[in-house]
Image (tube, rainbow, N blue to C red; front, side):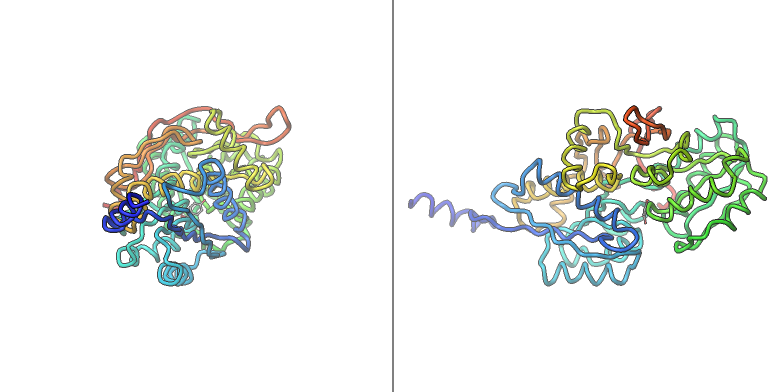
Length: 390
Ligand code: PHB
């Protein structure tokens, strides 16, 4: 008994507690409104990770505190992050579906002594805004660079690009243009649409009028991407032979049932397909399906959330549960593991995830469901966008 007491005193003196602490992780994302399914996927990935790995790290218990930012809203995101740090005393911030919501929070990380683990926001520059940012999702530079080569190799020489007019859209436009022109193709016109655009008919007309043989598109996954791909079909672009190229945001699995046969054959490049064939993904899909309640709702934010939790657990382990943002982030620089998506690592310099990018094609599986079938792998892709923002 005396020994135990002395050990407890020593542990307190060393700054660790022999008694269990609760470590709070604040997660900001869209949990209501039109993008609620994306937030639901964050939660499914987090729940799946904690179901498989338990809710304790060492003697500490991990507790998730969710905050809802339904649509890109930097002011609301910042206010909620502040509340999470000051009132809830979270040791970690995570989530962040939209780039502006992540960008708004980077300036308060240092003062709050809180690392940020980005589970979606995909603009390259975010990681340069604070040394306390780690990202387990992707960037649109990373996912849009390979599709440019695919488009050129498919015999398409003239493309029109259409993107949402904000960070990840502008990055996607630049990435596609750089890759396509390097291959020998030409981007004949580049359209940037307001983020809130939901009537795509006028855009479809401009695509037709441009004389391009193909269209490259990026919009943030959600109701807008579904609307865009529908408009591409309904306005006769597919029938006219105008080819469609995009990163996988445009064909997320949860949108495929609503697109139906119209989506068949669409090729996209992305870091994750729910159908990825590996034992790690099989286990993940099982746990995430249990968490979300319906396999048809599973989509890519779930895997970045799952891997984000892996990173946070490693950070808690490395700091012994003590709040030390810098030490936590240092501990995961170079961390490598097998994700449900394939082999990944955290680049020690950029703190962004290095991963395979897959070319996928929408097909009907044997069970009648629509899937993104992986047909080619671009191995170990870093973020080409970082060179552009340096
Ligand atoms: C972003 O805002 O960074 C974002 C959102 C949804 C996506 C991709 C990027 O599908």
